[in-house]
Image (tube, rainbow, N blue to C red; front, side):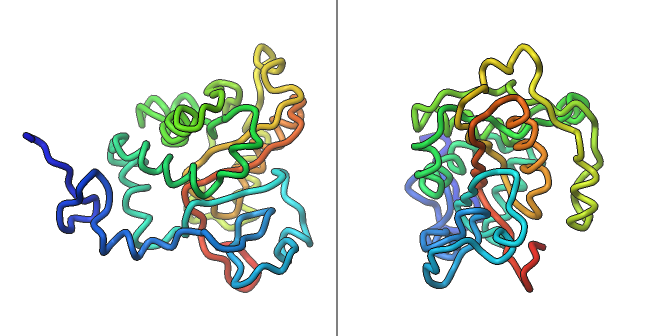
Length: 232
C-alpha cells in the first residue's frame, strides 16, 4: 500500500511490477522460428541454422534470447547492469524462462557468465548471476555460480569489432580445478544479459568444454539484430 508498483518505462501504473501495457506491446519477444545456433529470428522456419552459423559454427551448441535488444528492452537491462536495479532481475528471468524453455528443460545446471573480481568489486554484483539465480529457482534447475571464473581482467567489449571482442576475451575464462567434477559430463546452460557478437559466450563455452562439459547452450535476455550477415 505504501509503495505500489510503478511502471519501469514511466507509463501508467501496472497491476504488478513491470512495463506499462503500451511499452509491453512494443517489446519484440522472440516467439517465432529462430536459428538454433544463435537465436537469430527468422520470418519463417527454414529448418536450418542461419548462414553465419552454418559457415562458422559457434563454440556453444545452441542459443536463445527472450527478446530483441532495442530502445524498449535496453532500458531495464541497463538499469540492472549499471543502476543497481537488481529488483528487475526476477522479471528478466521470467522472460528468459519463456524464451529459452527448451534449453532450460534440457540443462543439468545453470552457470552465469562471470565478472572479473576487480569489476565485481566496483559494480558490487554480477548482472548475469542476478538473472541466473532466480531463473534457476523459478525452473528448479541446479545453479552453479562459481563453476566458471574470469581469470584475466578485460577491457569493456563496448565499441569493439567482432574480431576485437574475440581477442579481448581470448583465454580469459576457466573452470577452477576444484569445480571440474561439477561440470564434467553435464549439459550446461550459460546465462548472460545480452548477445552481440557472441565472443564472451564462446570464450566461456570453450572453457566449460575444456573442463569436460558435454554440451553448453546459451540463454540471454536479449540479442541484437543482425544485418548483412554480421551481428552488430
